[in-house]
Image (tube, rainbow over all chains, first blue to last red; front, side, top):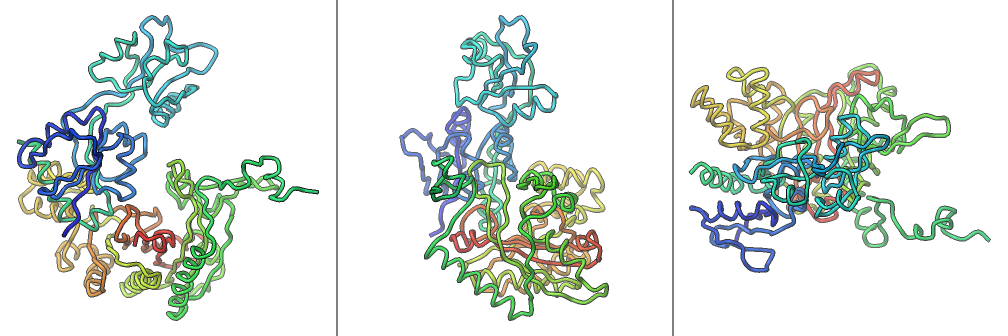
Length: 210
Length: 324
């Protein structure tokens, strides 16, 4: 019996819109409601691994999954250079610099600006390109409270509707890059399971077009 | 009395048993298994007329810089020696071999067969990933023929067999082949854009662009995107010598047991110095290639003696470790 095609699926902000897409025909996959992190859809020959967003590229790059879904923010931060056959038309947002709305100046004088973020590499690259000294404060989450707690002057994070930003007294200072979700595919999977990979790609393309 | 473990260990006791990031040690059965596999590979290469070359594990950085990509340069381990010169640890055998072999080659067109083995060190961008790899590889110098290319692919697959790799998937490609196959319908910037989308395997985007030209072009683009060209595909005729290699290699290798072959010109070259035909070998599991090789006809000329060359390298970690 052929092993299922394994798809690394992000549990974060993209999970809901992706779930709605997968529920449509012809896949008609029910939402992942249980606590299991490996979901087999045997009748479709697909296995989903429910993962932290930042782990998706690792699973695909190292061959534990043939395909994966991740935001361009995650792909850039992890320097993932795998093929990206599909860009999804939902879940788009911005990776931006945020500052306290009450701040009289966004960039301090006389010292490097302190920036709290989950995206150390992208933030470092942004300030390097600007030629500005920056002290990057790496955080795993809840970055929006860093300025209030005097941990950082600015925050570099995703902005979607802007609700979380405003609820934490922040304003958008600068858009660093636009972000969109992509399907990624392992080159090893293309070599080993070419027909099946393209078969699934065609199905997904059809679902997005309908 | 001086404590055991060296002066570094004595000053920082926590380091006594720690390994530097990405380094690896192998002992007992693991070491034996790797050495036996290496011995079998080397025995096969010697029996086929390949002679060993040993190159330094550290060298001046400057001669290498024009032969590595920006990403490869970032991965180099470099240091300053006591004379103030910047050195790098060996990250790739091919360039090192060209640098040290070129001055020793006679200025004629003689054919040389060379093999090498040893560690390479590359500090990749991913924290904690392996940085030290043990490579065995071989090069055939002075022969531009498709037979030479085929010999190298065959030697590579025989080496994988000698290391008891269970199965392999060979992807055959050539530098610039994709852009050439898009001509004359797409040329210059248009070809680059379309080739980029094909390499990303974007079905609808490439289909839209190609259909705007003609249904025949769309069918060609689709074959290039799916990356499994038949050896008889007319598009291969446009590639000259590289096309001949791709055709013959696909035909010859398809008879090999436990080996699947695809001509996929959208596969990217793993090394920036490749000039023509190249190939990538994936094992039965894992995401990274277990071996690869290709033609680099300009490399030796950069070190003083122009000599066409084709070669392969395999990483023992990927083979003995079980992904092949």
